[in-house]
Length: 362
Ligand code: AMP
Ligand code: MG
Image 1 (cartoon, rainbow, N blue to C red):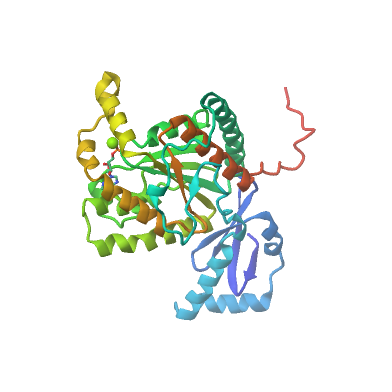
Image 2: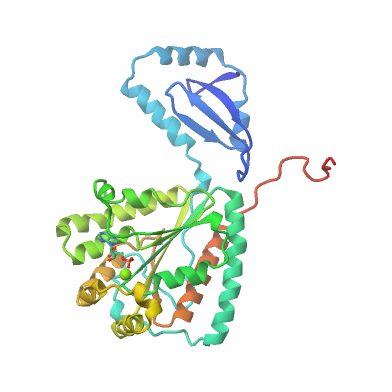
């Protein structure tokens, strides 16, 4: 096993076989701190150098030192160096026309946004345009999955009957299920409630190459929790900052965060609830608790507006989607997802050398 010094630390190199879906073979280096890091091929050249006996001596001496603040500081620098700088997610692209994006620092006034807006689009033409946007998403998703470097997290929030499930069904139809996971967040389980507020969400963020969808999300902890008074105000207020830090951390780790608020009117909610009562095939969707929640309509609107105001950041602004008209909602969301994936510009990995021209034996 070749050994070489790396900033005064003895490092052993172990090649990991080329894994499917990976863009390049990865070498894992184990330092004498017992920490591992991955390096792409552009850094491998450095790692292949000859042993520098002077540094090796320093390293060997370091290996016998008791743990000290200085040693941990060196380890921290090593780890920081190992974080791939080139996976930072690009900032979310501008949303499709018809969506209102809350700019960082802007106060969100939901009453000023018309839930009936349809951008003057034609219903039938929009249905056809949706098929085109879906095809774009499908093509780009294959690249994202093959590239295996970045990920996309799509967050949906809305009041009851706001259309989260219908949007997910319409927009993600035809996407390869292997590269996409949808998570619905309900009242926290006992185990979830025993952990920190972001634990259950963080555990479900998309890995490299994946599209993750949150049907409800970490925002519930500043929405329903606030409206129902489940924690004191100072606790949910503190969460805006925690959420911004969480999303920034995800962005720095290569996850683009795209957040949609589906904006419906109170009259539209009444119609949708009535439709669920009238149609036996929709009874399963009807939750009598929704009638109680409806009484808190204004409190929910205030909680949504505050969350959108405080958590619209440059890397992850909120997009308000006029959502009374389902066909319009589906089209502009699909278009924004496709545009965002296009801006991420995922690339198929480099083929291993010598593939073209190979022959397959009989
Ligand atoms: P549904 O999405 O209609 O199946 O309902 C899920 C329910 O779980 C809704 O009433 C949400 O308000 C509730 N819920 C989701 N997250 C939380 C949370 N963190 N705390 C309390 N209730 C929640
Ligand atoms: Mg419900």
